[in-house]
Amino acid sequence: MFKHILVPVDDSPRALKAAKAAAGLAKPMHARLTLLHVIAPFEPPAYDIEVLPYPEIYSPSEYKKRTERHAKALLERMTRAIARIGRVRTAGTFMTSGDPWRAIIKAARAKRCDAVVMASHGRRGIAAVVLGSETTKVLTHSKVPVLVVR
Image (cartoon, rainbow, N blue to C red; front, side):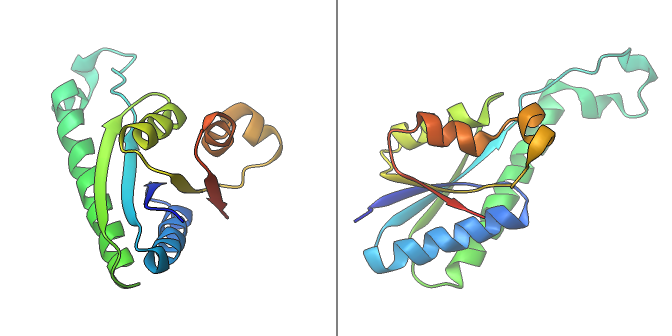
């Protein structure tokens, strides 16, 4: 049924659970997975950089280097966890975006995915209103089916 599934991931246990669920779905269909990690854009400190203990950490180039290294390590960990489930072709990618839901939809379209499997962090009440829900936004705007894992 599905041939290519996009799986947005972060460091949370729920994301790992969603990645494993996607692998379980993909395996019998011989579908491939693309793991996507969305990096938040660099936000310069709101105070004088001269007072920071390690100003080099707060440079755009250092931020880019550290976040990309983190993304690659995360994608490798997720790929290894999926490999334990069985033979599922898996690739990882990352992109920078201030709106993760837009990045997820853009990646699904660009990579021609026919489904998205993602975690819901289960925020309720005022936390859901204030923080918003990337999952809800993907569900609302996606043109491909979205499976939410809780």
